[in-house]
Length: 551
Image (tube, rainbow, N blue to C red):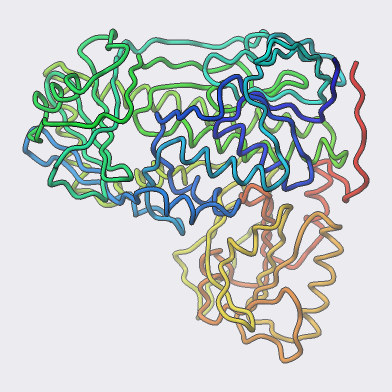
């Protein structure tokens, strides 16, 4: 039996599902398979950071996720009964200034529901057993749960199948590996602790660490390092009770173990994220210690970067070379995450006297320095991730003298940086900019500054639509009141908040990429660079979908 698919995604975890959703909402319905069962409840990852909540908001899922999880605002560190530091994770520049504690299976459930709404069907009990890549596609051999074999001819094969990725292995993509020799156990228990349930609590001891996180239903997640790299295969209540009693002042009478697991912290990094028609994302491309909670979030951001590019290629609106930017933009970031997580894990689990003293000193400094806390909060929320220097972004921003209404401290996001959310107004009332940017595609935001003349605004808007050439929407924001003659797509910024957040002093343009990074900015009303941007991107206006053929 031979079948065809434009895109075949292997792995229906958070990374694979985000990619499937992003493709589907752009008109590309992928095929997605998973070797596991639909009722499997993997729960290792529990943290959704601010940047990922913004991504989920773009997909229409952030509010539902928050309702199913526990919002956390602070990270507390202790040495025995002594409080060493308190890090405020709300100091992030985000409409979601929090870290959400939610079991991975709940995140997956939300993503599954959204994928199914968009017409994506997940095929469980289906595994990839072999593949042969050609210039025009990939021939994939599949094995179904009932023993049936299948050959699938796909234009693009995506490996989102975890650290032991079959896609990566069968493609022969090399990876760097290292064993951190740190063992951990984790599990969800019921226990009566007088701890505030809006924060993480991390306890350090000379024998290791214990971290506890509030979970839905009144439970607590316990993560404990083990003295060696041989943790028990199936940790029980006695294991958790022993570490809590040894390393914390908390009541060790834990009960009602809901779920447990163990692992040895290892890290790996694929040598490349793209090999012809094969692309890797998530743990298939990079895996590391869970300390810091970056794994699932980084994987979902991989998918968010890849989705819009792959959709343009599959629909025939861009050349395959656009996908080279996925490797160029994401690989340095995932390498930095692996390196940082490795260092953090070693520091957090160090048991020598020198390591313990250095850690204690660093944490006490952290608790006193607000600028450091703010930067760490933004790093923790993945708001420091940027694509400055990418060939897909550029700017013509010269700066201009401060105006009476401007905040000279604000310079605005540079090309390659994240957009900033702000409220503007239309005739119905306030509107969040992030909601205006939800429609798939690029968005051109024209800041009109003090210009309110209807004729001028209408002319600018017409020129903006012409420059966009069907690639996305146009939003015009003026500091004055809305024009007397209604113009669609025009918004008011009466308190100058939007202009200040974007560093605007005079009429300016911001071209926003589909993944909500600034693709281009210019501090003049010159639309030529907008057309240049799309030419540099190598995309054409929307057209009929182009068929591919396998080699």
